[in-house]
Figure 1: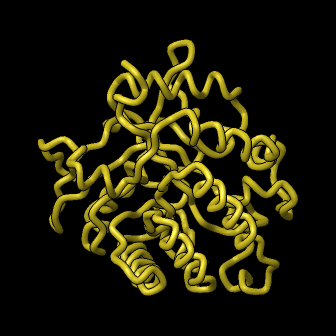
Figure 2 (figure 1 turned 30 degrees about the horizontal axis):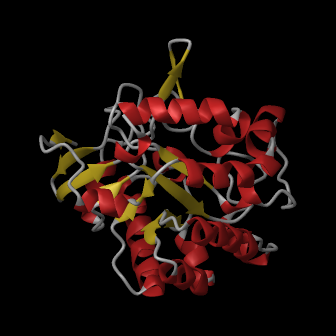
Length: 290
C-alpha cells in the first residue's frame, strides 16, 4: 500500500527545558528551576521553523511550568496551526505520586496551558510515559481532569514506566469519568524482540533507514507511528547534568543527528495530530474498562 494511503503518523514534542530529565539524582528540584539558564525558547522556535517549512502540524505537549513562564511560545505554536496538549506541571513520575497529587497537578496544568493557548486542551502525556500497573487510577484521573485523550502508555518494558502487554493500537478506555482515547507508543520488532525506534535516544541511536523501515512496518498494520522529541534534543550545545554513563549515552548521544532526522521524517511520512485522529474516530468503538 502506498504511504499516502496508510494511516498517517503523529509527530509530537514534549516542550520542556534542558534540565527536565527524569530519575537522575542531579536533576534540580522545582524550587530551583526559575534560577537556571533557559534554552527552551531558541530550541523550540527552531523546531517550529522546520514544521512551518515542511507544512506539518504537530501535537505539542507543553509542560505547564514552561507555558506559565513563556506563554508567548504557546501562542506562537497556536498561530502555526499546531495542537496544544498537556505534559503536567511539575514533571514528576506518575508512579511516585498518589492519585490526589497527580490529579491536582494535571488539573492545574490544563488550566495554565488553556489560558496561554486561548483554546481547550484535550490531550495529556505523562512524564516518562510513567503509567504502570501500580497506578490503576491513572486513566480515571486523566478523564476526571477533563482530558479527552492520553498518550502515556509504553506497551513494553521501560526504565521508568511501561505496561508490558498493553494494547498496541489506539483504543477507547471507559472510566468512571467518561471515555478516554489512548494513543500508546508504537513498538515494532527487531530479531523477534519488541523495540521502540521513534523518539528520544532511540531516534538518535538507530540509523534513519532502519527507523523508516520500522515505521512503515507499523503503518502497514494500520497503526499510527507516534514520534516524540524534546527541544533540548535539537540543541547540542545545551548544558549537561551529571548522570551514569548509560543514562548519559541515552540522553546526549548523537544530538547533532536529531534535526536532520526530524527534517527527513517530516518529508518522508504523512503527519497529522492526535486531535485530528480523535475527531476522525480512530479509536476502537469497543471500550476497554480502565
